[in-house]
Amino acid sequence: MQVFDFDNTIYHGESTFDFAMFVIKRKKSLLKYTPKIIKLLIKYKRCKMTEVEFQEELEKFTSPFLQNKEFIKKSVQDFWLKNKRKLNSNMLDKIEKEDVILTCSPSFLIKEIEPCLHTKNIIATEIDIEKGKIHFLNFGKNKVKIFQKQFPKKKIQTVYTDSYNDQALMDVAKSVYLVKKGNCTKIK
Image (cartoon, rainbow, N blue to C red):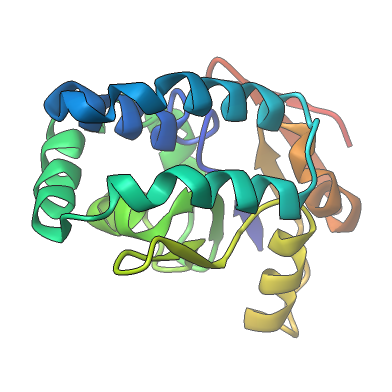
């Protein structure tokens, strides 16, 4: 079984960040959150925060984003109309029906493009839109925990990821490919 990260692996960029910027452009009152989002993204990409710290910071600014469910739903649809082109066709071609996509991006964002991803085995961060609370943060070691819970008898043959934030997944996989700008380099 292969496991794929989503951001900067299947999707060119950070989908959650891109979505946040997309929403901010539509709703200027959210512009004040931009510095916080950028700071959080930098810390995340540099592996400078724990899962708990990441979740706490993320929850601080998700509540204002998620207050209007209809606005979010329409924004997700419009976002993918514009950004579907950022899906990496080379990576999509590698995904088989039984493979798994593990992503820190929120499920409400990823569900919209599930038919394009060649698998229904998609595990994303679960956010309660009503409360702006994260039920399950699919980040770091949590990716391995949820994989093992959902697929207890399966072994990870190959991992495709862009980040050492997925070190826990890398450690349990037989082979690992680091994806940079759409190119795969075998590192294990």
